Length: 211
Image (cartoon, rainbow, N blue to C red; front, top):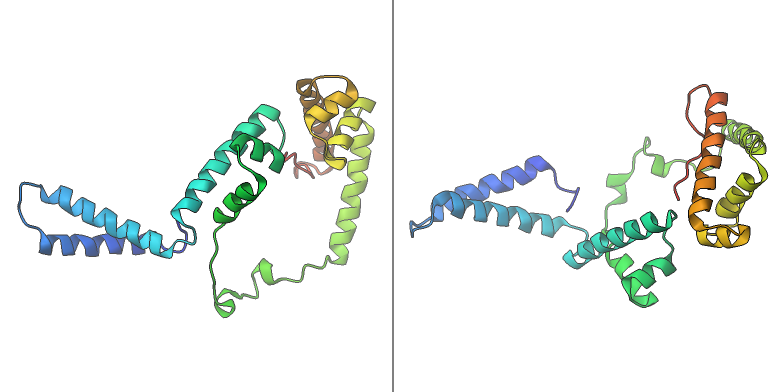
């Protein structure tokens, strides 16, 4: 529920609740273990809710959005768009974006407490000469790898990654089904990765298919 409270602190809260339960317990036919368990659990949940940066409704929306997105992407073999999510949820655009906003954790922190010279978040984002040289070499390597693909494989990657068409749209362009497009895309990526991995001598592929 929250990463802003350490497990040890949560345990201490439970211990305090246990001590309080021992002091207030009255034998009315309920075992002390059951009574203390309820008090400890309640105290810890109250503390988690107090420090949480998201409401219970927001947490529920996050779980729902995640489940719907996973279902869509499994069926389509592609990243779920906002339009896909809106249709699957059966809500209008304003309600959908309100769900996303509620599912986003928010809070205020002191900049003085957060700042660190070693924190990448505060580093200069400008690329160095080394970064630019490495990026240029990676682009050349990627271009060489893609040049070894056959025409259809190269076209599928072009339409998917550059033109940002989904599998169904690519299938309509090529006159094949979305499942076939998915197979071609995976085969093309496998070939490209194999060539890139060979070039980098086991350092791993230079790009990932996160869609």
